[in-house]
Amino acid sequence: MFSQCLVYNFMEEKSVDQNSRVINILLLVLLCLVWGLAFVGIKIGLNYLSPVALTLLRFMIASIIFAFYFILRRATIPFTIVPWVIMLGLFGFTIYHLSLSLGETETAAGTASLVVATTPIFIALLSRVILKERIGFLRAVGIVTAFLGLAIILKPNIEVSMNAYYVLAILPAPISNAIYTVLGKRQLTNFEPSILTGYAQLFGLLTLFPFLSHSTLMEIVTLPLEGWMPVLLLGVCSTVMGYTIWYKLLKVGEASVVGANVYLISFVAILGSRIILNEYFTTHLILGGIVVLIGIFLTKRE
Image (spheres, rainbow, N blue to C red):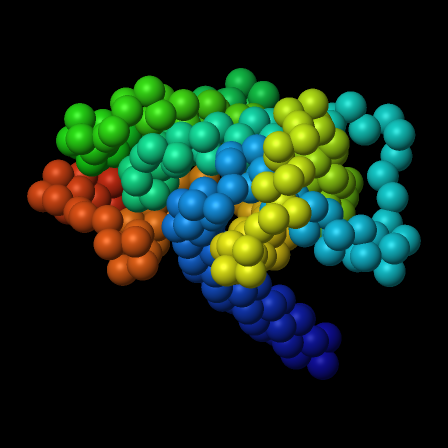
């Protein structure tokens, strides 16, 4: 009887682990979809709003949702970690989205997604320094290989861009995203992903206030109905849903491994920009994409 209980418990635990794995895979796919299409949503939203106004409005929508959630859950955070959460809001929301939206004003959505796709490189480096996560040989080769693939893709896109400086303006986004990921990973041992995400987003909204002006508020007040569609997509799906899933996945996996998987976001963004925005893709894009996939495979093999 005792042995039967042991076998049953083992099988039950194995089933739970398998179910958790399937759920995490589904969450990763959903994350790639909502964040990949976010690049398209930003491009469309910039037809109606400036980068600051677009960022502010999506943050306001997300903040309202998180605020209701906190009230229902009576969720609070200790005062001692407020400085850390402010940093998460500053890097993960304010700097990231301002630089990305600014860059996308003159850069294709697909190109922007590929610049942001360098995030895992910075995550791996910061994870090694801060979280002491190991970067083995295969993972290092995989990251470098994926970066070379991105270089192949980016070269012609930078050359045909209306202004190459706008492409470079996106570079703070992957760096700040890596900082947000690694610093947030340290706090996830004590907090639920939704709570940590929500408070970081709220502080991200507060750190955005110095960039506001009268013209920014007028843009929001006069925003036409069709302009609200991409903003709602960005606020609800990309910000609330996407960032919560991101921290949930980080809580159960190493930052560098989870980061390597989201290269797939770029492919969703490129496909979405082609179908929705009619942006082109070239031989460089196909060749570079294959190299990126090889890099992902090598990273996962370790």
